[in-house]
Image 1 (cartoon, helix red, strand yellow):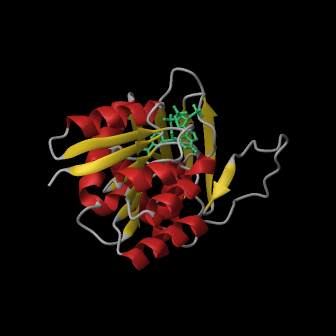
Image 2: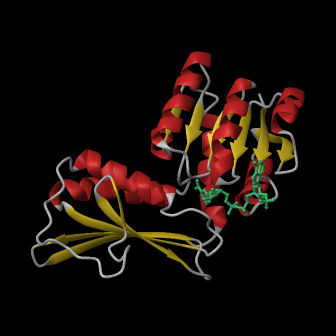
Length: 244
Ligand code: NAP
């Protein structure tokens, strides 16, 4: 059976790559392409796609996902910026409708491994900070990948080590932000795609786990895999690791 896939955000950088990658896979067909000017609920009602891949922008991800699930489509959401509450609600909606789905802050296989290795390292080296680096067109900070990494580190290292000193920030934000008790520093520069360093400090030792996406095609094997996997499951999951 061919999987009919609608790509939402198809005129964007990630959406354009997804159109190419999904279109090249023999098991899939690009049934439609939508972007900002289209009426998503109307197109969903007309095309009835099996799967909808969404690469739009943070404030659109939640209403788009609601529309997709409402129409009986299986969401593959790459757009970042969904809150924990929104993810919980979308998970419950998919469970109710017995729909497979995925929300993935990062579709690169290497990035998923970076997150997994970081969680493992945090069990033994609890002092850790994250530096994430992205292109200068990225709207939100910190990145979804950094937040997910921090969440996985917290789950592996439930008690963060207490600070050694009472820190004073001479400029607000100098020590970055903190998600799940892990400091995150966000860099936005031209010449970058998506990169992250997870730095662990121990007694006279340092461990750095680094991942670099040097082209957006790095995310596409994960996208195509997810399109197929959501057809085989009846619940929504958060993180590509569930499909590896
Ligand atoms: P982009 O180049 O700006 O593309 C986004 C596209 O979506 C644009 O064409 C935009 O139109 C359109 N759009 C905006 N709001 C929309 C809506 N409500 N309905 C339909 N289309 C809408 O951005 P990008 O670099 O492709 O990134 C897209 C998202 O993917 C971001 O959230 C980014 O953080 C995320 N991302 C995820 C991964 C991952 O592996 N999960 C990897 C890279 C990026 P306009 O140009 O008119 O605004």
